[in-house]
Length: 269
Image 1 (cartoon, one colour):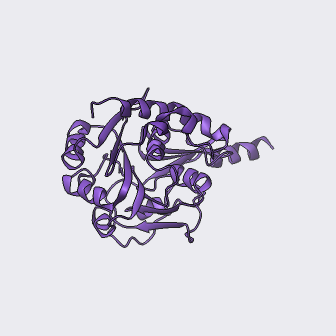
Image 2 (spheres, rainbow, N blue to C red):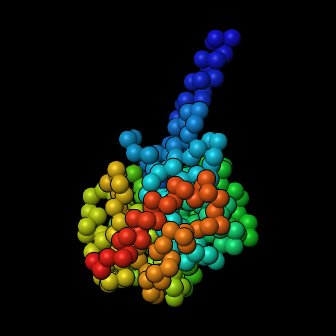
Image 3 (cartoon, rainbow, N blue to C red):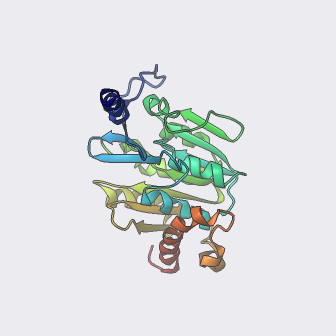
């Protein structure tokens, strides 16, 4: 009995690597993404020491990593988005959350690495349907083909080396801007070397329609950029924040929304 438990625990703890699907965009050159699991979490890694995404095995729709909650403050601009775009699938944290709590939204997730897509079932990402499409594509190539496509665009495109150069260029962010609807907003997670230069390239595209919100206790910064106007003052008050989300799930978003609202009240972009 003890030997059986030991074998089961080793299987339970062992890393899981992606399958080797036949990639349509050429064989990825970065190290294979891999997954660790314990009794509480499934965690996706692109680099040895970095958790790219984490899922609660018992509450898979929770947003466990702080910056993923901050990015959802894009709902201050567009409380009921009809079309959500995502650059980078990862472990699907925001996808699962949006699919549950924004039932009117159609979600399109763009992921270049077929090995990440191959892990979707492990991370309880449902099959494509009328509300969901997961596309294997290079976002730098696909987004220019998506004019005015998204009310909310969530950008978290990383590989083992960080943000790929193609996803940090002025050209890419111009395509992101053009992919937003007239009142659309994007939220981009930035981390690692070159963040300041990355933000300046975004500023060249969006000008003053940009705010940078540091993530407490982390090195991440979340950048919001938009096409239209700032959210009206009433949307920056706690009474407005998404009442349609059940309190137990809404409460973790409150701090993130307050930090973003505070950044929007300041004049400095």
